[in-house]
Image (cartoon, rainbow, N blue to C red; front, top):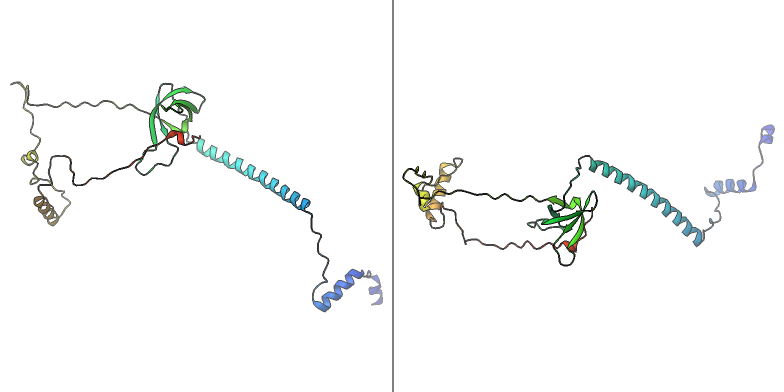
Length: 231
């Protein structure tokens, strides 16, 4: 026993005090408070941490941009416009429910780069403006439709008579011979014919204009110069 105790190293006074305090109070002795850093040291630490986070954020942002560009380029197609061609311009404001977000058409004046074009917006303040191709779409001129109508005037003796495509009820506009949907039951068809007969002065088979129901529709206007165009 004496030999074993002799091989042990003597305890330091601080260690003896800690062991004694743990046995008496169940915890170690209180130590002096840590040294409080100065304002300059605290500011430097915050600055270094902010710089580290800024660099990490920039790296993650660049990686996210590369992923978005790779995903967009998978189905993207290059659209080209020629000078003098008419295009529609997307309004830079959030349109209303019934308001069209495309305005124009405007004429392409010059191609500035692969994805930017100089357009004539016909505005007295800034008539020419460079816009990104993502804000443009081509304008297609509507073809004129003509319809030939045959009349009884000038019909020769050798001309074939015009077919009578309207029934007797359709000629005078009456709704007695109206054809109802076969999906309706007999009771539903009877109710429809009763309503048509009761209000025969309001219903007609001849299309026309009614003033029984009117409403106003305010679509507003789109000002291109009030918004910013970005690609």
